[in-house]
Amino acid sequence: MMAEYDPSLVAASYVVAVLAAYTALYFGTRLNSAKGAERRRWLVTGALIMGSGVWTMHFVGMRAMPMDVAMSFDSTMTLISWLAAISASGVALHIIGRQDISGGLFAGATLAMSGGIVIMHYLGMYALRMSEDPVFNMGFFALSIAIAVGASGAALAICRKLQNMTGRTVIVTQFAAALVMAAAICGMHYTGMMAMMFPAGAVPAADNGLTGEWIGIPLAVACVALLAVALAVTIMDVRARRRFEERKAEQNEWVEKMAFVDLATGLPNRSGLEQKLLDILARQNACENPFALIYLDIANFRELSDKLDAVKMKGAIRDVTDALKENLTENVFLARYSASSFFAVVPDPDNTDHAFMYKRLRQLDTAIQSGETAVTWRAGQSVYPVTGNSSRKLIRAAMIPRDLNQIGHFSGMKADPELVLPSQINS
Image (cartoon, rainbow, N blue to C red; front, side):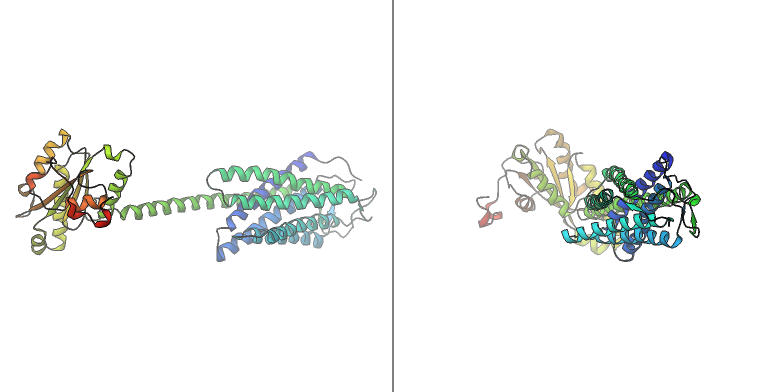
């Protein structure tokens, strides 16, 4: 009754199996992160795509087996075999898409999926409804079941593994896994074909509702089109998720950045200053790289606040900030510590490159105006490691008021014992 298999249909069945396996892997991993109604949509769609793909592969594979008579199928059995494939796929995806899964659940998902594939395959074979009963080869029958169980278990294990993977390696891994899974699915199918043979001379029932003309290349083309749509959806979903993750990362970065930035001036705020000092002090050779902290506080800040409304006061602060920046050396870190005060972190404070900066800072009282009111200053300074070896000590030491003319003169500076707490004497 049978001749050699049609290579084009065998190849078509494998292509369908690859596409079905790939979309199944993607939908299976996608379920892990989906919740509520979204998860139900992915589950239903995944079950339809996966079940229909495996079912199509089976019937295209059957069509690859030419018969001496025209092939036809019983409509009801064919429909039931399709529903069996979809139901098995849905159960398997539902279980495997859980956040946590025990060994028992994994085994149950494997048996559900493999059972659905076996039922779909042999029910589809019976859908031929031949005039003679089929003859079974029990060895090939057992082997086909073993392949179905092994392929299902491998597919579900791969789904679980892919859930923990990120980046482009996921796509490559999914495609490679789909090739292997498709080979296993086809292996089960063609082994099952050898396990269930019809005697020579057997003919299909006259009342079979589906003719073989529609089961083969037309069905493969229709399924490939469906799978192509599914793949397009997955690609758009991947891109959408990637954009979402990028926006989320940008938002988190912005929020983190704003925690260290003064919104009024754009300068680092108190947290930004402390983070800068901690970064400097954490360096291995920190002691070999001294730096100075210069504290600049607007002495007549209250007077300015009383004279100016909120909008003009913000403008005045920005003007003060710009003026300070112009007076500082390029590599000096400036931060706004409070509403009225600023800190400048000066690396290598004894470097002659800073001489002109120190001179201008000593003249701040005459250099900056806010409207008709001159901005007057209080100043202080500390130097690491002489006046302290922690950010806290250095900031407290720098806030001790000094004459503006002392800015930049660090000789003779020493730690103030009154700034050291009893618990910090040996620190």
